[in-house]
Image (spheres, rainbow, N blue to C red):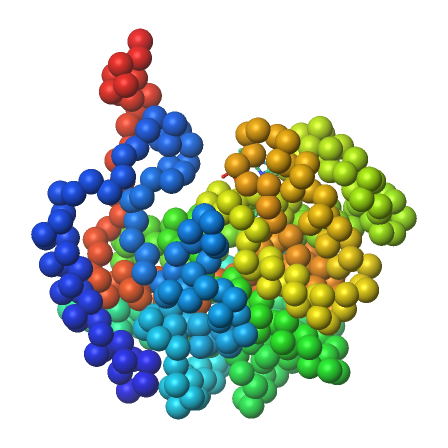
Length: 426
Ligand code: AMX
């Protein structure tokens, strides 16, 4: 048995018991009230879900199992996966065991390449990536064991098996999509001596003589790994998985949500806007020019991509970590410089617009400029990088939910006439 499974096996039954006892004793206590505004407003702020892998306090940003991002940003993504699941950082032996397990599971079934090869050339990389995951559903240990009559107490174990198989394989799938769509179409074989994030960087085939692109990919994978349970991709994946559709179905479904321009696709939009700005002003714009262009964009009815957030009310600590990476490795890069200048200008503009709840940058405001520096200039691909990372959190959440024995998700909807009745409107 792998050390991760052993550790979880020692915790999961007690956790499930504790949750049962907790809900039995306090089940009728009120956690949150729902206003009509929230019913019509994407349920913003309604406390109606449990997620123990991570939390996002509006005034702090991502906290994983009690660790603020600044404390763990230099950890490997596979260490973060361990942390998300167990609540502890792995020891050296535990980490090596997990890495060996992932390497042993990393061979991608050959039909995945065939399916990707038959997709139309203009398919979006996200559609290709999610297809690559979904097409592997026939490998699901959960689906097979469920059909065999697996007891409910073992759902988490089967979900862990699916998680490890998926996490082990998606870097190669994502890298092939990049090579196929934007480079010579040839796969770069994985290197078993590299860690998960560095191996992904290696398979992308980006020039990396000083190894800093590998560092960036590790950071990228760590920073995007999880962000609570209520964001579009996590919530969609959770809902699908709650029907006991296995992780292949639920992860690809959730990642289809990440492909939306208000969620994960914003990172492709963001760099586009930065470059558009530079193009317009023939290089690095002045702060005055930036301010004017920000207003022009807003007045044209467009959003400023990379700014604002549904939950956060401060600068996203993931932006801070990416910005620090750029400042350390290539402070003079013109695109990175423009991103830095935008950070000095845009919040003061957005603050003047009353309806905007958060004028500060989110994770997407800086990440694209770092990728661009390394020659990874195909914006369309950026959300796939986000997805490879976010698979860690979505998988960890699914394992926890099945471990807790949570039921199928089913909030209640009401027609407008009923809502009118409830609030006493005519
Ligand atoms: N530029 C212009 N307008 C903005 C804005 C921005 N960056 N952020 C918010 N607004 C507008 C909204 O469009 C909304 O306008 P409307 O009432 O006319 O529709 C109004 O301000 C109120 O929005 P909000 O309560 O502040 O935010 P929200 O929770 O509804 O939406 C988000 C959050 C992220 C979708 C929004 O801030 C946005 O569109 N930002 C730009 C896109 C972006 O960066 N997305 C990435 C998010 C992180 C991620 O998932 N990767």
